[in-house]
Length: 435
Picture (cartoon, rainbow, N blue to C red):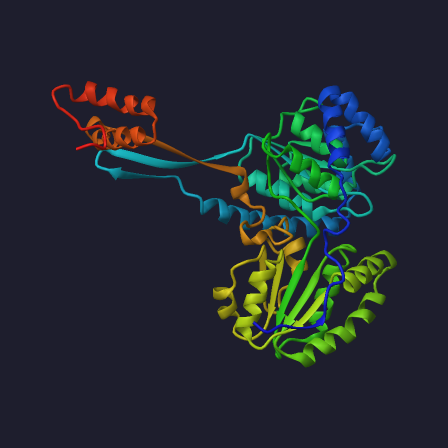
């Protein structure tokens, strides 16, 4: 596959990841040993917050009263979309049973986790959409208890819009803690909350590392790195829309890769000319992030045909994959590796990030090669069961005994033997591989 790079990334998103593991491990250890008091010490140190940690009903209602009605309407609109999509996902999970051999019935059953911990970033911005995506899916999955956790602002608390959203979406408890201490509180069951079976939601590198360390003791949605986005385009694409879509994703942060692959060189050149001016028109902090991301992380490449576009996508395995090209159905059928796919200029990553219904907690750093994003399915355990008649057990027991003896597992073999001896006492069986 011939790829011509008009712009090549100067660095990788992992270049400055640093070794935060030791720091995070020490905090987790101290909080697990010290419990609520240790978590509160870290809240005072990092969050600069000494208010109530588990919000009361009065505090939740007071926060809701501060949210403008127009914003409430928008949040409800987004919630309806996310909920409806999650409900359709839930309905796709079926309990079933099948007669594997005559008399032996095996089945599948979907059981939700009992306790979910949902982290929504706070700080400078109110990440309303993260509360929407995580709490709503947990609620639709019918988790027994849902804790929403978000960093409080110094001396103030959680942003009212996040509180309103978490409550609307079905959170049973709202926890005013940030960073590692918030993740730890949910995982260890502090402040009278149940221990989380699964932790979900985006966060900074310390939140991500805390989830990584705790994985195994609890489930997590995925290991998350910086957000990344790839656009596939041909000569039919609008360069202004392509450029803005790249800038919109670059503003996430200095280490957020954005990539453009196109079959049309003039489009690539036009987009590269437009992007700097669009970045300069952003507010200062957004512009700083986008400038660094475009300078260091962005790539623009020209390829010969649409098959080459698809190969680029499968190689990069992006979190977000946008197609602005002819014959969208061909791309839908051909593309294999992405967290979420946006087909045509009429949709964009920001729609999925905020309110169109699909989830925005997605695999990054190439992880879409092997996993999808957050969904109702992440909270569901697909377990199996079986039952059998005695006649149905017979061929299974015979095969089990012989396979077990081949593997040197004599105890396993005898659990089959004893059933055959009991159920068919007058019959002889060849339970070795000899003869």
